[in-house]
Image: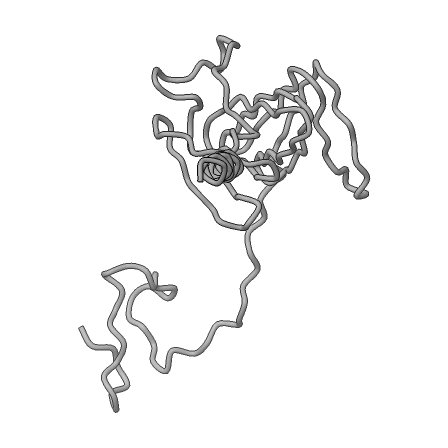
Length: 194
C-alpha cells in the first residue's frame, strides 16, 4: 500500500510542477534614463496596449498592475514611454506610431511615443524593422531609431453634394453640425420652418 501511495504522491508532484504557470517572457523594467523616468509606482508612462499571441487585447494604464506578457505578444505605447526586456529565446513586437519592431533573445529597448513623433532606443541586443521595400533592417545596440509620422491628408469627399429640396435662408452654406442650423421643411412645405 505504501508503494502505491508514494507513486501517487510523486505523480501528483509531477503534475503540479508541470501545471505551474511559467514566468513572464517579456517584462517592463524601471527606466534608468533621466529623460524617461516613470511616475512613482509605475513601470511605464502613458497607455500600454497588449495584444497577446491568441489575439486577445488588454489595455493597461500607468500605475495599473502589469499582467504576465508571454513571448509573441505585441506591446504598443501611446503618449508615453516604456522599457521592455526579453529573455533568451523569447520574442515580442514593439509598436510605435504604426511602426512595428521585432525584438527578442535578451534585447532591452525603450519605446517612446507622442502624438506625431517617437523613438526606439536599443540598449542591448538588437531590433528588426521592415523597410519600405519589405526587407528587414537590423538595428544593433547601442542605437536610436527616430520615428516621425508623415503628413496626414484630409479624406476626400465620398459623395457629391445633394440638393436639399429647399433654399435655406441666410447662410448659403449652413453648418449641419450646428444646433442653430435651420430645421428641414415639414412635409409638403417649400420653405424651412423657423
